[in-house]
Structures are given as structure tokens and as C-alpha cells.
Image (tube, rainbow, N blue to C red; front, side, top):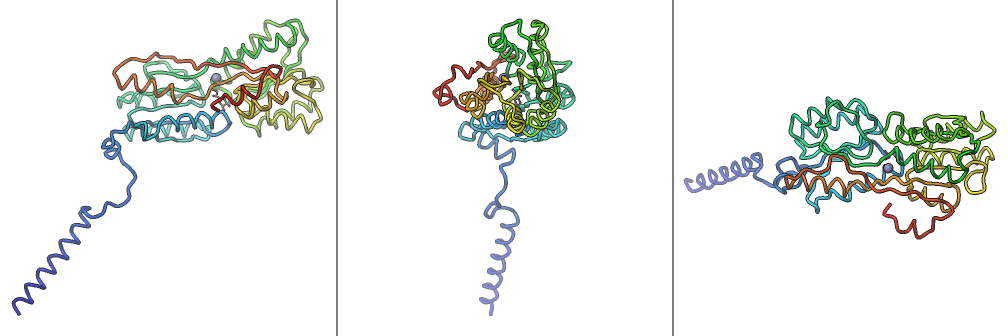
Length: 337
Ligand code: GZL
Ligand code: ZN
């Protein structure tokens, strides 16, 4: 009897040990998302990226560049948040990254104003902030470590130079101006470039101006309204390719010709793949490049900061312009996006 009792007692103890082990977590670890400790354990650098949205081909290429750069194989854990073009959602994302103690916070700001409070919280938490693409207006530029992006005003000036070459500076021009998301640096700079051109060339007149928010749908809506109101449009100055695609739909439906040999000369921005195909086809006359490949530039900055060095405060990406009269298929094949 005694032996049986011992055996039962031992079996009971063994079961008890097993059940304790599993609830103490010593058993097979449940599948959990890698938390901070795990990230540190793999010594990955955590990068929180607050992206504007997915409003355009340019934006998708920009997101792709960041995803391709900040991989675990390269030593990073990328946390990407898409704000659907809402500044409120971007500020929430910055606050989440701060709470998660990200090593770096990258922000592509949808508009220029209203970032100080969220960036101050990140600064107080000792987290370096890198601004990409568009710019922010702030009373304290210590709130961000660096900025990587485009000279949007220069992009506008490049577009105006194309118009001057095409029409001569004493031409009478009726210009339709499709603006991007109002208050974004890309819209502000490209608009400033056109305004400078209009002031310089007295025969140029902005007949119609409205924002298509950088999207194809809104670009079409705006252009439909403009075409109904104005018989004479010589130039469409369109602040990104996706709005130009929408405007082309509207012009096709209104039987208004455009591009090389057409009534309406199209000047566009971004030089996305689809935009350059349209330029090669002669549908867009001039396409000013806007380089979305910020990933490698941001990583260069993080590497410098990790090494204790001080990167330049501002880093401009290289950009050019494509002309329907000279672009080749080789130009398009040679591009990374
Ligand atoms: C420009 C970028 C703009 C693009 C648009 O750097 O901010 O936002 O021109 C995109 O296509 O929506
Ligand atoms: Zn640019």
C-alpha cells in the first residue's frame, strides 16, 4: 500500500510541477510580437516612421524606399504608420513612438505647421527626430535633428524655365494651376516658383487655380470645373503626376487636346514611372523630378548619429527635369522607381 501511496504522491507532484511550469511561462513561449526587450536582444535599431499616407505614386515609392532600407537584415526594426493625410494621426503616431521608446523617429509631415508639442515630447524623451520630404515650420529647430528632402521652390523655378523656353518670355499665356495639398512644402514651393514666373513674365496669367490635394480623383474634379469655365487654357501647371492623370481624364472627356502638339501644354511634378511613361508618350510636356528615395539618406544620418557624429542639418536630394522632346525609354529603364 505504502509503495502505491508513494507512487501516487510522486505522480501528483510531477503533474503539479508541470502545471506550475506552464503557467510560470517556462513552457513553450506563446507567439508574441517582438517587444522592446526582444528588439534590444537582437540589438535592432527601432525606427518609428510617420508617413503622410498613400495618396500618390510618389508616396508609394517613398514608403518602398524606407521599407527596403530599414530591414531587420540591415539591423533595424521599422514601425511604419500611414496617416491617410491626417496631421492628427501623424501626431498620434509620434506619441506612440515616444511611448515605445523608439531609437529614432522619422516624420514626413503632411503640412508645415503644428508639430512643436509632439516633437518636444520626443526631444524630452531623448529621441532624435528626422524630418523627410516636406518641411516643418517650428519656433525651435532643435526639435528635429535633420531634414532630408527637396528644394520645392527650385522645382517650381525649373518648371517655369521650361515654360519660358517653350513659349518665350513675352508670350500671352492662360495658365490653369492645380495645387497640391494646401500648406504642404511641396505645394508652397512649387506655387512660389510659378508666382515668381508670373511676376517676371507679364503676359502670363493664372486663369484658374485650385487644389487637387495631390490625388488623381480630385485632380479630375478640379480640371472638369476649369474646362467648363474657360475656353482658353494654354498651360496646365500641375503640382504632381497623379493630379495630371486625373486632369487628362477630364480633358479627354471634354475633347480638349494636350501634350506635344495639343492645345494644353502640361507641366507636371514627381517624374514617377507612370509620369515618365506619359512624358515619353508626349502626353506630359515637362516633368520635374521629385526624388522619393529618402531611405538611404535617412540611414546615412542614423549611421552618423550612431557613431556619435553630427550630420548636416539639411540634406537636399538630387533632382532633374524630363522633356517629352528628348526623353528616351532608356531614361525610364534606368530609374529605381
Ligand atoms: C513631394 C511630396 C509630394 C509629391 C506628391 O516631395 O511631398 O507629396 O509631389 C506627394 O506626389 O503626394
Ligand atoms: Zn522633390
